[in-house]
Image (cartoon, rainbow, N blue to C red):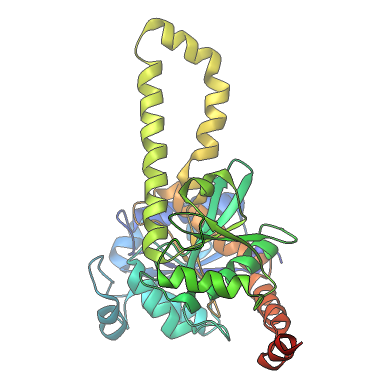
Amino acid sequence: MATDSIRIALDAMGGDHAPEMVLRGAEFALERYPGVQFLIFGEQSRIGPLLARLPRLSTTASVHHTSEMVLPDDKPSQALRASRQSSMRLAIDAVADGRADGVVSAGNTGALMAIAKFVLKTLPGIDRPAMATYFPTRRGESVMLDLGANIECDAENLVQFALLGDVFARTVLGRVEPTVGLLNVGSEDLKGNDAVRGAAARLRGGMTPIRFHGFVEGDDITAGTVDVVVTDGFTGNVALKTAEGAVKMFSESLRAAFSASLMARIGYLFARGALTKLRTRTDPRRYNGAMFLGLRGIAVKSHGAADAFGFANAIGVAVDMKRNGFLDKIRGELQRLNDAQPTPQSTASSAAL
């Protein structure tokens, strides 16, 4: 699908540096996707002057004034009930009524999840959407979910996340038979809480055609041991933020080391090319844009502290999902996976034999 037929709704008031970061991010995104159109929802008096300084964006964007916004500390239930005219809610509404192909917001994660689930609804067989994103590994890239949308999960939720991750790896990462692992505190069968052990029992029991690797530990994430890492939102968010912090600390330590002496600065000149490649490979802004998998529409969550470059990448995630027909593919793959699951009658017959 050509990008000139894609429309993305933006919550211009969400994020630590909104609305300027959102608008500049959209301007950057147009360099990669020159035909995309934007529906910008937010306070006209703040957006107008900024948009006037962005000539490329101003020709392809329409501004929809909203007098309300979802605050960072708003509870999801409060945002769902009392923020029907907020920039976040109206941007999601634009996807639901077909005016936009996807929505991108850097706002309150819990509120975005609650409103998106209420307005867009979940796909058949999915109770809760899960936040997923790419993760750089030694073997390439993997997908990890959930990253914070569901703090507490039961075994059924984790099994559904495994299904969604399997479909994502097939349709987006191009894996023919992706491997799936459950994040745990050890690889032994007796390790972990009831939810993790229950999900593992179901995945091992052949109730899905997923290639279940078993339990994986924290160091397996960046090792690329599996294509899909499944966990609850609490653990996933902690793991993600820990990885981001480790990359930042490593970068700062490396910079300090190369500026410590004249010889170190000379050494940097020789290593600059390799260091640039390393910095690009591990830059968390390149992986900004977590997808809510399991919804009937495209919704992408940007990091709240993202800069314009990071937000542009989040927009790119939404555009690529639409351009690649992700929703149609995920519906088809979920149906295929559901059809492949053995029925209780067939399971009972096999047990009898």
